[in-house]
Length: 264
Length: 320
Image 1 (cartoon, rainbow over the protein chains, first blue to last red):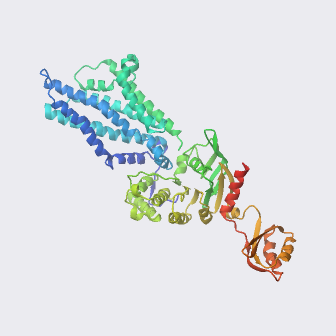
Image 2 (cartoon, rainbow over the protein chains, first blue to last red):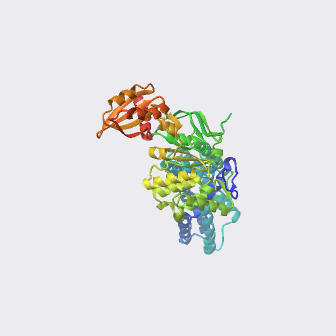
Image 3 (tube, chains in turn yellow, purple):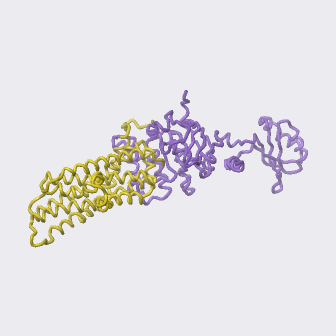
């Protein structure tokens, strides 16, 4: 190749070919535009402002500060479990489909870039950016809020356990949405499929056998709140956590295999 | 053994979409440092061929190599040495032209940053976008996007530049600019470009292939294509009574046909010959032997690419 001697050629091989560059571009789409600011404001309002309302609302005569504090922590995970999950789905719903429809996917893949690297870069950059804005920062603000109102913060190890389950729940929907994006050609079925899976969790557990429900992520918002509380966590909570992790890995594998066969 | 002079080499390359053959058994050879015009009407299979060469689609059957690398197995390796401009290029609207080129350059170069930035600046200058380099692409005109497209395809100074309809959506000025850039680049690289603008092909290409309904119907150096398939033809424009001269010419053994066309008071002859050397030595003398005849024009017929194209593609379509 007629490269200038001063220029160093890149030499990564396999799935890493082009990965770092696409990853940097994907992070850029969050942090070099106003997207991060929009999300920051959105999640501070949806999660932390709502929590502030709950914390400042007057409870019944029997309500103690300790009960209120526990309620605030539970609301944090419940609100996050629903709204942050919908946010996560909407954030990545077009990350594969949109690139394909726009033609930018074909452009990137006409360069030395692996398809695996393309999908993983999307997952990592969107996942990390979203979790930072919709989980990490609201968590910090929650701690400031509880410290200011209740003069205490949640017990760290229990809270981190709950946070881990909450993140796993979000990762499940992020990977599901990415996978759907590799399987279908338009945004509608991607969003519909992922949001449908989320809302099915409100209805189906009433009819399905417990063993089936245990193999889904539907109980995780409840479990994350339980983990963060001072209540005992039942041994049966391990099954949905492991199942959700397994599903997430399976979704990534399916997405990579499908995208590898994609034609542009 | 592999022919080192071949940049693109395909054998029976076929692509079927839902039972429809978009490309049928394509055997294509593109030599190093040529400007290869890949012609065909819309839907002929030009873009499909390009996508197969770049690994954006997989062949249904057949095989192909670029620089000796298999187009299916070694696609990433191939793409390190290729620059590609899509038919309707799309980039990220929130990026500027410079950011787009920086993103593209990072697929090829690890650094150092000043050298990468220098390459970006040179490329922007090459395509005449230096004064718009820091504006978001969102506001770019079609011509500016196309120039950016050529810039991103050229950023790695590729051994092969694949351009899919590079001038299709441009006004005459934009087209001229794109062709000028292509002529500038030909010194360093092989250019394989698809188009249906025949005038452009005739201007810059040295080799041409014509695709119709997914089938290769012509593949030759442009001079050979322009010489036509009907042998050598000489054109004369005459004034005056020429029947004696006509009889003398037709009697020559190397003359196979003489077609007479009357127009605006003069007579045109199209003389088909088997021996161009004999025709050039004797034809004019034979005609001028008649004192009543004046010759106002004489020369070998130059085919227009459009004529050849219409003859080949039109003939194919009628034959179907």
